[in-house]
Length: 211
Image (cartoon, rainbow, N blue to C red; front, side, top):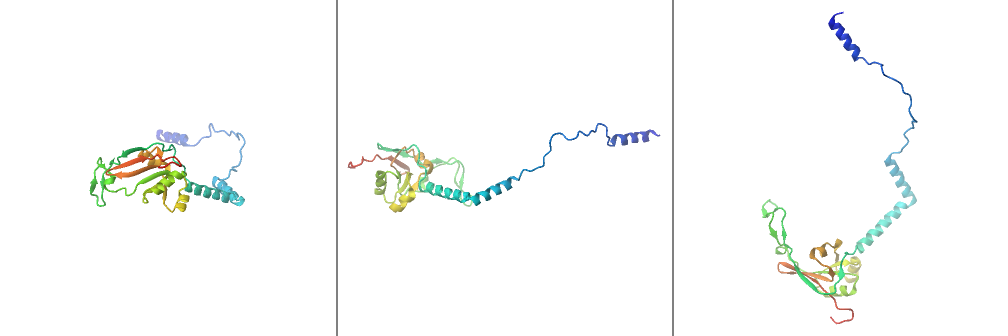
């Protein structure tokens, strides 16, 4: 056999599969069939069972009841007291722009870093009155103020008050406005004084006392 033929034969032998080292180890441990149900099937079965038992309808009614209750009586603003002394200060609404303000055609209106006072463009036409809607004295005070004032509750039921008083009531959700103006007690008033806002906490006279 020629050297080339010997080399080819050797390559063919090494390339062919061999049974050397192959061994049947048999079965190791118990083998079980896959019987776990698909997760979606489990969810679907659970929902059908809940619907059949009336649990779905009960949960829907409970969610509806809680939603209505939350809308009618939101969580009160935490940390506010009833004003026991008059306090007054000014609030400057001026902001520093973080980015350029451009018009509809891309024209530059205000460059980033510009100081802008919103009161130069939009006036606070009516005062903001913050009050505890569950306090009859504060409610009477607010309703006796400017008829155009915006009545903002920090506690109470705005929908019930709107129906009973035929006035629109708002709610300071999460206390964002009182925190922004630094209000710590109610009733309080915010009104415009030139390019500033005047903020006042107003101590009402004791019940039965003359104002």
